[in-house]
Structure formats: structure tokens, C-alpha cells
Image (cartoon, rainbow, N blue to C red; front, side, top):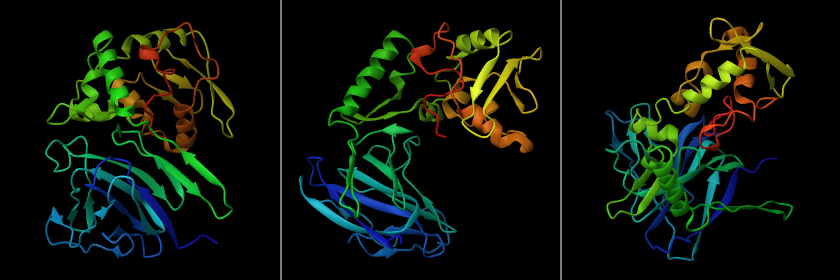
Amino acid sequence: MTNLTTQFAFKNNTGSSTAYAYVTGQAINNGYAYAFLQADGKTVYYPASPSSTLQPLAVDCAIPLGAPGSTTTVTIPQLAGGRIWFVVGSKLTFLLNPGPGIVEPAVTNTSDANYSLNWGFYNTDQLFVNITYVDFVSIPIALQLLNTSGVTQTVQGLPANGLDQICSQLTAQGASENPGWANLVIKDANGNNLRALSPNSGRVMDSTLFNGYFQPYVDQAWSKYTSTDLNIDTQGQWGIVAGRVASNGLLTFPNVGTFAQPSAADIFSCSTGPFGNYPAATSVEMGAIGARRMYNPFPSLPSPSSFPPILTPYYCKR
């Protein structure tokens, strides 16, 4: 039987005494209502629907993490779509819209009150947890789980200087190959590295980033698979399926569907253009094709910045 609550121990290794955690999600055992933990780390707060937009929370939900090296234990109920947020140097601002709807911190909205703060999060869904480095990288977060059998599992996360290493490599890549990479580095008012965005998040802030970046590679792929089968292992009931670029310029999998040439935005987002709006009758199989690697990769075609083959976006969120 699944426990109704789980204890998390947060150890403050930030070097700052001004560090906080927030716990948010939808309460599985309370009609999936939006829920926060309050500052005591155990009392659940269910925000009411406000009469107007962008209203503050009615209670303090910033859980103090104490002095550097100290550990704070919190008790979390079963949550769907749960997140545990961490921030250093200040508190985060969460707002409410009618519904209620939760306005969370954003890394692509420069007018957000949280934009200049040093924060990050990881996702929790009951005890399925991931340290989220899909949209951006900021605070190093590690995770250790001790289960009821006494077995410990550890996810190390980034090293203490991991963000600086990533930003340094992005800057170097931008200087040598495409300036878009350096533009993914976000700095604070003092010029320190604050976070590194994924290309997809970077394009939310500047839609011109990486325009045409993949086009020579896509053109080579389309040329190759005009006369050669592209075999995709769906890793599902359909097995390995073969497609070719037809005379209409579409990568075609007979009796399944077609893919038009993807743009850089489509490749980074993994959900737009040819990677979305699949035919209803074959949508599941099309999704499996779009998300899998090729069965016979084409090593003779160099991919920009050593990205994986064309139907495997590096920052894919699937």
C-alpha cells in the first residue's frame, strides 16, 4: 500500500542562510485541488479562487532551509504534477488567478518577479521523481532516496561548478559555431551566471535564435532518403517501419503518415510542425516514429554540434 505522505529531508549546501523550498502540486486525495505546503513544511494550503488575476497567496509557503549544512525535514502528501522548488537569496513569488490557477515562476518572462532570482526545481509525482534539466539549468540539485527495504538510490545532479562549466562551453560553442549558443547564458545584475536555457526556452525569448540552423542537415537527410529507406524501430507493436521521401517532398511511411521537413523550432520543441497534429487514426504510431532513433543511422551525414540524428531532437521533452 502506498503511504499517504512521504518525508523529504532538504540539506542546505548552497552556502547561504537565505535559502527556501516550496512544494506545489495537485492533491491526489483531495480532488486534485491545487496545493502548497506552508512554511512549517507539513501543513497543506489549498488556495481559494480569487476574484481577480495575479493575486498573492494568502499564507507564507516559503520553507526556510536554515543555515548552510543544516537539514530541514518536510512531510509531503501524494501529489500529481508535484514540484519542489529551491531559491537562494530571496523568496519566490507565486500568484493566483481565478479558478484557482497558479502563476508559477518563469525563466522566459523578463517581467516576472522571479526572473532575476537564483532558483530551480525538480518534479515529483508520488515517488516518481526527476531532477529537471529540460528547460534550463541553475541550482545544483541532488537526490537520495532511502526506501522501506533500506536500499538507497542516489542521483548526483550537477557538481557545484556545473552551471559555470555549461555556460563556459555554451559561450565557446557560440564563438566557434553559432552565436545562438552563447545567448542561452543568462547572467545576474553582477555578471554572474544565473542559468543556462535550453534552445527551446531561448527561442521563447528570441524567436530568431537558430533560424535555419538545421536546414543543411535536413536537406542532406531528405536527399539521402529519397532513394534509401529510413528504418525506424518504434519499440512498440509496429516493430521496424520504413519510410522514404516521396515526390511531394514529404517523408512518407506508407499507411501511417508523413513528415514535412522540420524547422529548427520544430526540432528543439519536439511538438510543433511535423512533430504534432498527427492523423487521429495513426497518431500513436506516428508519435512512436517521431520519438525514436533511426534503425540504420547515417554516419556519413554530420549533424550540427554533434546533435543526434534528425528525428531525435536533443532537447526533446517526450
